[in-house]
Image: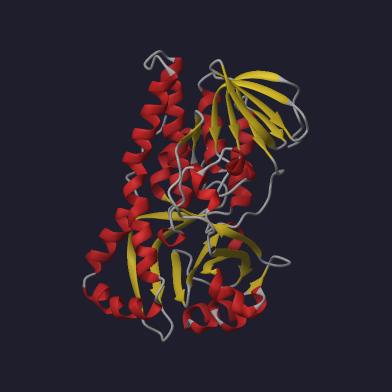
Amino acid sequence: MEIRSEPEQVSDVLIIGGGLAGLCSAIHLSGKGLSVVVIEKEAYPRHKVCGEYVSNETLPYLNSLGIDPFELGAVSIDQLDFSVPGGNSLKTSLPLGGFGISRYTLDHALCERAAAKGAKIVLDQVEKIDFVKDMFHIITKKRKTYSSLFVIGAYGKRSILDKKLDREFISKKSSYVAVKAHYKGFFPENLVGLYNFEGGYCGVSNIEGRKLNVCYIVDYRVFQKYKSIDRFQEEMLKSNNDLSDVLETSEIVFEKPLSISQISFDSKELLVNHVLMCGDSAGLIHPLCGNGMGMAIGAARLVSDSILSYFNGKLKTREEVEKQYVQQWNKSFRSRLRTGHALALLLRNYKTTSILLPFLRSFPSVLRRIISATHGKPALGI
């Protein structure tokens, strides 16, 4: 699908960022008759650093948007394998389960669906946002201008826009690095592996096309000792026997792994100069919880419902829209973020984790309750 820059225009909603949250919102809102513009800086399809496991809580909503992940080749996952260096491990069923699908495939399908629903997909980058007389005025890198009644910020974990909007978290250094690649190799189809090592953990799961997603996050202070991704994977990742087996029996598909740095798990404002933040722009759960994609998709529904309530007259003012969205987002996700943060602090030390594993193995219901605390119940479709 060809994506081109659009001339100056006015829309009901402008969405900055065409990831999961931005595209789901675009499909939802345009499907209800609103004029929607999505400004995304990179063309589709493309790979992104992501664990690529999605909770089943998203399925009813995705289906109502016209997206069936299993028609796209998604793999059903219902088991978890967790291990630490030294061989200590446990296996358990996932209370709700999920599916594995690449961002390359899912984002592209969402983009095509959004365009089919009438959303305008613009390949450009937002450089300036002004809010004047109850309207947003946007200037892009290509010097295009757009006006919109509402703006959704769905541009991801970290952006130059965060600096321009003077967001508090952006001034703090974050020590996390994430690395991802696809592999060809054998791994049980219905299993997601979570493998601990010093300073981090790695997720392994199947995606479409009989490929494996291998994605890990690590404290930069540990990572920098090894000088390169290759050396880190050779020496550190293989300290976990289960992970070592995966890497030694699989062949990388990518020319080289993808990586991102300065990943922040600090709290973020949901509302910045009237921009409604959504997806990773609103808050990032630790990847070990396996629910970042699910939260982004769920947040798209919340922000879309709040905006639609204004256009159908249930909410009378912008302030009411903003209040409803913030309340619903906090109700749905705030406790999950706290649980994820606590788990990350606990599991960052693999020696502590080694002590906990026998307890969790003896009381599997405790682990399932912890997993449930970072996930929600399936939401109804639109």
